[in-house]
Amino acid sequence: MLGLGLESNPPGADAVTSLGPGCKTPCTVTLPIPSGDFTVSYTLNDYQPATVAVRVFGSPAGALSPGTTRLEPDPVVAQLQPIAPPPKPPPVRRPKPKKPPAPAQ
Image (cartoon, rainbow, N blue to C red; front, side, top):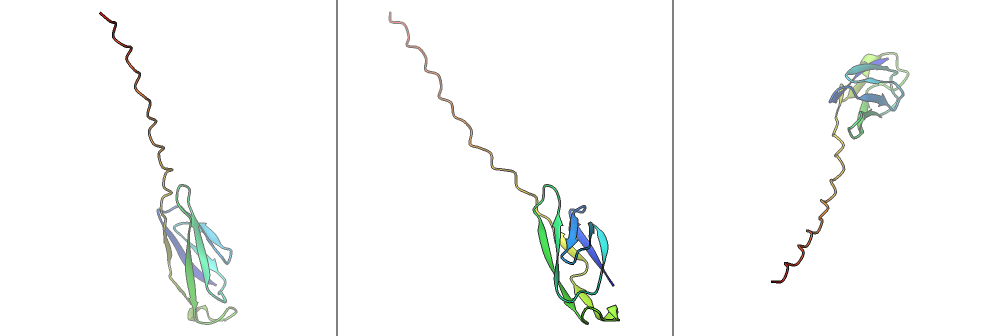
């Protein structure tokens, strides 16, 4: 098993690996030794979702020595971007009321 740190800026995002385990950042998940690269997906209200790829280096899944397996990046950090507010509609231009004609003298 391997431990992998998951962080986000701002903290408090839900982070889920494509291998299954997840947690609320900042946190650490315990993973079986992966057989290949995987991703971590982050979600947080009012922020755009983000996905970060994780590369696996070293021995394949099922290896008895997790010390020979390395994950990069570790910790996995996502910089979350706020969702932009919808554009403001243009101001409504109301025609100025016309003045009544001046009384004839």
